Image (cartoon, rainbow, N blue to C red; front, side, top):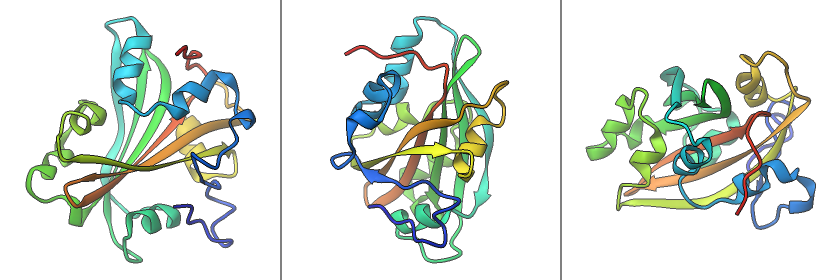
Amino acid sequence: MNRTDPVHAGIEPHWIDQEQFRRTLMPATVRMWLYDQGSLTAALKCACRSPRFQVRVLHQGWGRPLYSEARVLGSRSGAIAIVREVELHCDGVPWVFARTLIPASSLRGSARRLAHLGERPLGEVLFSDRRMQRGVMEMARLSSRHRLFQSAVARLPKRPGAIWGRRTLFHMGRHPLLVNELFLPDIPERSR
């Protein structure tokens, strides 16, 4: 599913299929988070151990996917999608930056509700829908030259040198959506 071409390589990370990614390259702090196959929202709530788990919506509106996002979604050049960017917080501390892309063509039938989530976690909706199918997951190390990195760390008091992330193509019925999840420096190490 890796679709970044040389022209866009400077602004987009090099996404690698999870099966081909060498686990030894990533820090233990995020390794278990990256490879988890369940709902990230549920896992974060469990790790937070606080009633103060929160989804903070940073942006939601129509926009254009990045080059590799459009390729993964199978969108034609110039196609628009709902772009939703959120931070997932525990006790006011951001642990994850998530960027979801829902192509206009995917907003049909019951999937239309995805355009109106507000502060409700997307993971709760996806993992409670019987029609949801999870596709291949890719992973990447993101640095300051990448647009997603810049969006993810823009509100942090101290910018890290790099962060780790994953992206997954989901289908609700036959309608695709892409979820990028970037793990911020304050996320705790996850045990099995």
